[in-house]
Length: 267
Image 1 (cartoon, rainbow, N blue to C red):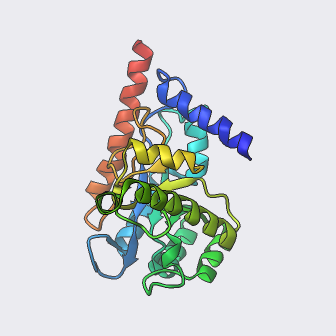
Image 2: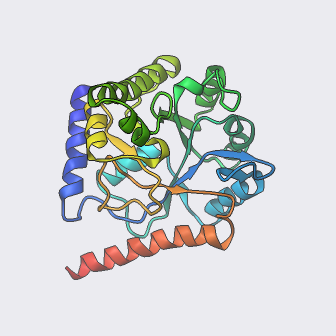
C-alpha cells in the first residue's frame, strides 16, 4: 500500500507540474452539508432542491462518479473535455444524509463521498452514529474520508498555541481521524477536506506527511490543472443554488473544459 501511495503521489506531483496532457479541466465537485424540509441555516439544502440537482444531472446526461474514481481518471489518462462528469460530496456526517439524502441517492443511483470528523459521530445530536455510517457503507453508494478529528479552526489554533503544540495538534487531527475511520468502517482513508476551508503550504505539507494524497477546499470553481493536489476545489452549495444558478455552475465548468481543449489544439 505504501508503494501505491508513493506512485500515486508522484503522479499527482507530475500532473500538477505538467503542461497539460494528463488532465483536462472543468469537472465540478459539488459539496453539500445538510438537508431538510426547510432552510435551517446557510448550509442547508432543502430536499426538493437536492432532488432537483439529482434530476437535472440525470436528465442532462452527467455521470455521477465516486470521488476516488474521478481522481484516478483525472490524474491518470484524464477526463475527455466533452464528457459530463461530476462528483458529489458532503462534509460533517450530518444525520440528514442518512434520513434525507440516502433515499434520493438510491433513487438516482448516485454516489457520494462523506468527509467525516469522528469526534462528532455517535456523540453530537446532529451527527450520524457509527452504525448508521456502516449502514451507508453497506448500500455501496458511499465512501468515507477525513475532515480531521474534531474540525478545528487552524487559524485560531495557530494563534492560540505555541508552534510546537500547534504542530502536535495538527498531527493528531490528521492521524487520529484517519485511524478512527479506518478502524470503525474498514475503509482506506487518504483524502482530506480542510475544516472551514482553511489551508496553507505548511498545512498542505503536513497533510501529505500524514499520508493524505489529496485534500479539498471550498474554493468555488471546477477542478483544474492549476489546482495543487492538496488544495482541490469544490462548489459549496446552498439552497440558493437551484434552477438556472445550478445549471450555470455546471455549464461554466463545461465552458472551461471546452476552452482549454481548444487552446490545447492550437498550441
